[in-house]
Length: 200
Image 1 (tube, helix red, strand yellow):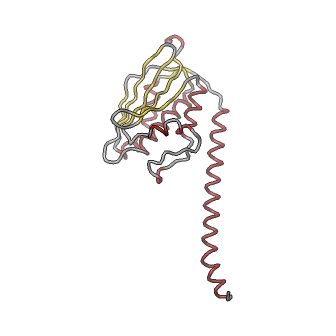
Image 2: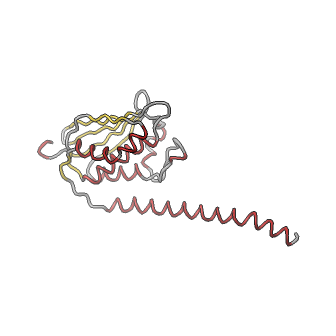
Image 3: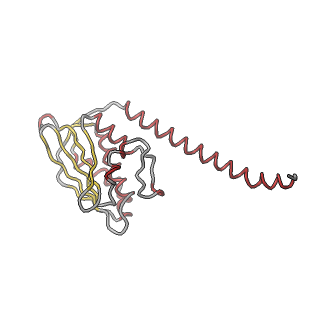
């Protein structure tokens, strides 16, 4: 191979190789950062207190107002009973579910999210239901795995840690969270948290 041919080959291949290395490094950095977030979430001390859920949710909606208006989304809120949990953790869980509903909304129809709640003995059950494209039955358990991204749109794919962190936060507050397919299309999330002692 002649020298000018080698130069041409290097000119074509070196930038491509460098871009590959840089892209791989960015992806690795993102994965490490995501793992650190999940790890730190597990060490955060929960400070449970009585939460007026209607007020907390309204603050979240106010913070997301631009995002919701841009998406043309409607959020319907029922009268929500109080619970006993860490406000920051619960806020993070609800914000994540609403953000996912907006990010992965169905094309061709207006996004509607309904939030309800009811006391069940010593616990309170909240539901967050959307009319999005839904999650396949086979993936309903896998969405809680770190780095699992349900591919509703590659351009919107996140880090894959939002739902695992939500489950960890709910678990650390003595509750539970699960997802199910919604009749007619969409997904419903069930969040169970302790009721305030005087109301249990």
